[in-house]
Length: 488
Image (cartoon, rainbow, N blue to C red; front, side, top):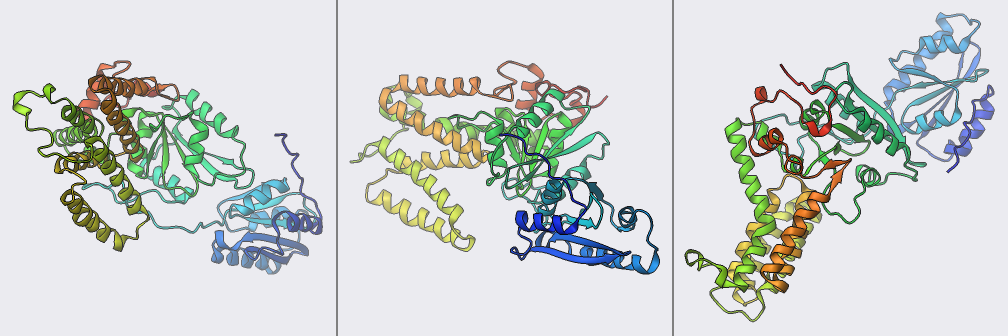
């Protein structure tokens, strides 16, 4: 797509007004504010978007400009006089009308002065949104209760509050021919891999699209080659403390305006199974919680395929486990029962997302008491199917990453089908395909199963055990940090 030539600012306010009327619809859009002032014998135009700025600041800005008529005499450069008297901490001079339009629609005020071929940009924006609150999907017993919001300015402040380092960088880019969505790349300059930072910036600058309607998810699909791989290639977090911890390690964080979820790169499979709660408890308790979570994730993938394998081939069971399997006959094959129950739970999860909170409890009672029990009574399900499907579902809910839990559920369903078709061979084929897919997956050239493939002893120990912070003297080598030493 050819680059458009920048449109210069005219010294005639009438010409600039005609262009703005055509480009942004000053007369048509009621939310585009416009005022004409006469300051020191010159005509001044102010443009702003009413819903994206602070009204008191706009009023104070105009009041200060009006006071110049009483307190000052016209000088040789009226433009510089006005710039010097604007009571704001962030004032920028621009010479492109295209840049003025972009900043105007981003919530900043634009000031044109008759006879000047430059304009003043004043940051008066105040985006509508909610206050920081604890994310629903990353709750902790001990820890902060603030979380990222849909306001990119607040999000950078929440990060800066935790990292008061002069080397922390927040680089802003814009993507989208129409949306012009703000994207912030955050990293610590002397820690993060400069090659990774440059790669991310290049990939973002190369995006050519009307707009990022789905914000961070759309951006992710441009950054990583997801294809048909269901496993998440980037990590999302809404917790500022989690984001800060990854920045200290050498990761690069990507913020997208209008989204409370921050993208963390690069990530491995084991980044998606960690949770902030482990690091808010003692190392022993954190290790215990981590292993319980590992067991839940393992059960969410392999429990149902193993059970159906033992049901179909009970001779594989040792005598001590002979009780495993259905004790009663059913007219519906067990494999069909499992698929119906498993997909039914997924349907309930989807329904819970779209159900108003006051009704979600009632929906759960209907599903558990009426549907589940009656389905057993009429012979649709045998009790063991409900038991093992429920345990697998609990393991899915224990997975910290929602994206990973859904990917594991898809893998489980496919593995169950393989076992039903080919027995032991099907289980081995399914498990091997699962591991090979993970081993073949890479995110920004980062092996997905690191530190086990390729093997790294220190990294593997930190995955298996929650280490105390004083013992973590080096940053993970997988992010290729410039400064490997995190403490002496």
